[in-house]
Each structure stands twice: as structure tokens, then as C-alpha cells.
Length: 236
Image 1 (cartoon, rainbow, N blue to C red):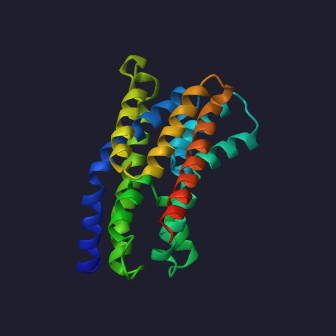
Image 2: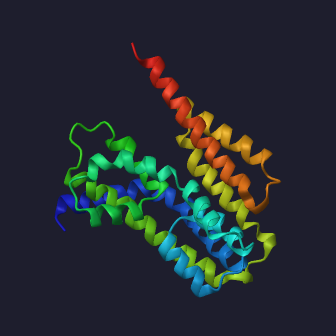
């Protein structure tokens, strides 16, 4: 690895490091939840490696245990992860010169914390797709993947040994809140968060945790509407 590549990788690692604390808590809780939810340890490890999306895993888990139709499980996971379509569109200019297998791998490894660290730094760069940018991004996503797998497997190994009184789910909620709130600055993002929160609260009685699905759809819809309205007002 060249010195400039190594330096860019280290800068990315340092930038993402604070977010890895919340990611590690989320991974640990997801691992425990998968085993406590009824999956075998081998199935939980396989899901962690292949899915690599805590929100989708926790959304799919109760549906799987409830015997929901396969199409509903896939739709739930798809909707929860719709934000990655937006991530992919924003990241495309930086990686479009790479072969599709490399872009597919980068897309698979992309996580929220890496995106919110990378984009503010390079979104306004005049030249996109430089070697420095790519290695910086690798410095954010590779450590994130390692931390997630280590903590998720740790949670799977602990499994039922973790008593419910520890309230790990609440700890994960606090960790994610601490990770997200500093980035809620623009009006469209604030409206999106508020809409998702209101719908999630109202839709709690829905079966199969469909309230979460409704909250995600509402948050994305309101955020897109607010963004378009903001752009329209900014035009001459």
C-alpha cells in the first residue's frame, strides 16, 4: 500500500472511530436478539455475514418467527433499507470508474456511519473519484464491517445468557440516537425524523411490527417531499 493510500485509509478510520462505539452496541444487541428470537447460532452467524444490516435483520426476525409470508419478509427488509438507494446515488460519482464487482462489494460494505462521515468531507469536491477519496472511504467501511461482525458474533455467543433486565435494546436505542442526532441539521431531515417518530408511535398496535415499516415509509416520503419543496423555493 502506498503512503498516500495508507494515510487516506487512516484518516477515514479516525473519522469513523466515534461512530464505531454506537455500531458496536448495535451489533451486540442484534446478535443477542437473533438468538433470543429463535434462530440457531449457526443461522444467526450466517445472517450476520450475508445480510449485514441490523435494521433489516431485526425487522425480518419477528416476521420469520411469526411465519409471515416470504414476500412480506423481503418487502420489509427492502423498505427498511431504501435509504441505501439514496446512498448509492450520492456515492456513484466517486466510484463509477470501478468495475461492477468492486462497486457491488463497496455497496455491500456501506453503512450509515461511513456515509455520514464521507459525504460532508467530499460532497463539494471538484474532482470526484480520486484514489485518496476511495481509500478514505475504505478506511470508514472496512473497520465498520469488522466491528459489526465481531460484536454481532459476540452477541450471538452470549445469546440467552444475557438477562432481559440488562435492557440492551434500550442501550442500543440510545447509542443510535446519539449517532443520528448530531446529523439532524437541515429542515428536511428534521421533518423526516419527526414524521417517522409520530407514525412509529401511532402504528405500534399493528401486527408483525408493521408499524416500523410504516414509519420508515413515512420518514422517507416526508423527507423527499421536504427536500423537493426546499429546492423549489431556492430556484429563481
